[in-house]
Structures are given as C-alpha cells and as structure tokens.
Length: 269
Image (tube, rainbow, N blue to C red; front, side, top):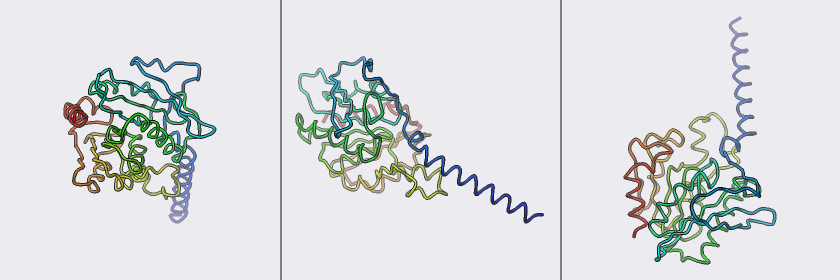
C-alpha cells in the first residue's frame, strides 16, 4: 500500500512538473511582457511636448518613437530610454522632466506590440529596434552626447546596445543579471536555457561595454530581487559603479534623493 501511495505521489509530482513547464513555455511572453496597445488612429495623450516619429525596423514592422525635447538653449545630448515591461510610453513619460531639465532630449520607443508599434516581439527584433534607434540618434548627436538608459526589463536591451555601440554612459535602473538567472530563482528545477525564448544576457553584455556604467538597485525590490542584480557588481570595470539604495523597491527608486542626486550629477558633467 505504501508503495502504491509513493508511486501515486511521484505521478502527481511528475504531472504537475510537466504541466507547469508546458504552461510557462507556452505563455512566457505574457509572463515577461505586459504591453498596453493603442489603436493606430488613437492618441497616447502625452502631456509633455514631443515629436512623434515612426522608426522602420524591417519591411513588415515599425516602431513608435516619442522624442521629448529639452527647452534648454544649450542641448547636452540625448537619453535613449528603454522602458520596463508594463504599459507603453505613456506610463514612463513622468520620468522625462528629470532629463529635459538638465539639457537632454529623451527618445523613448515602444517595443513591438506595445502602444502603436508593430512587428513580432522577439529578442532579435528588440535588439534590431534598439540599433535602429541608435543609428537615428547618430544623425544628430555624437557618441559622447548619447546616454543609454535602461529601466527594469529595458536594461537588457540597453546593455546589449551599449555593448556594440559607443556612448557617453550606460545607466541601468533595477537590472537583472540575466533573464535565465532571474526566472531561475523561482523555476530552478527546469531546463530554462532551452525553454526560454528571451535570454537578455545582461551579464555578458556588460563585459563588452567600454563606456562607464552606473547601476542603481534597491534592497527591497520584490520584482527583480537585489541579490540577483548585485551579482553584476563583480563584473564591472574600475570606472563603473553599483549604487545600492537602501529600502528602495522596484517602482519607487526615483523617490529617493540618492538616485535623484546621482542622475543630476552624472548628466550635469
């Protein structure tokens, strides 16, 4: 009887394991990405003045780019801002003023399937989109005027771009070591390397970034745990910095004076 119970328990565990694995593999896009779409004829209803641009990615897709321009007479450069996994440009518009007030334009792009952007949401397409954005920026700015900024999920795209193109600085807000390591904190029992469609090897990209890197992460981050992100500190160059914000969570780092002061300091130089 005990043997039968053991066999039944093993079967239940195996079935549960398989079902969870299949569900994750099938719906991982919905787990990783949480876009808000906007109909082509609709408006983002952005409060800040901006110049909308359609950026071609390939023959079948294009990305919506919002350019928030500084009103400063002397323009220092541009921040290429890669936002998080939720919503669209509208959700992150509130972070624009900080950069505009220091003399930087902010160019923010929506990923495929976000807002009005079209195309297939793949890791390769996200990198290609980032590259096209950089190429457009280079028509107006020199590399030493370009800040690449990544927030949350966007830190993967920002890191990859900075690893293949020159910039003044790479700034990462609440990054992850890699997507596999992040999800592996909860699904360590699965072969994630073969299951994941999105890897975002931030750790590998940072090794190839020649520009100074600044990372900011809070100790109370419940989305991307601090212990995952702090692993990046070990691979940084001597000129780079990992800034720990005590009691900072995933969504409130901008409320901390330390982060505000650091951004002002970096961009004012």
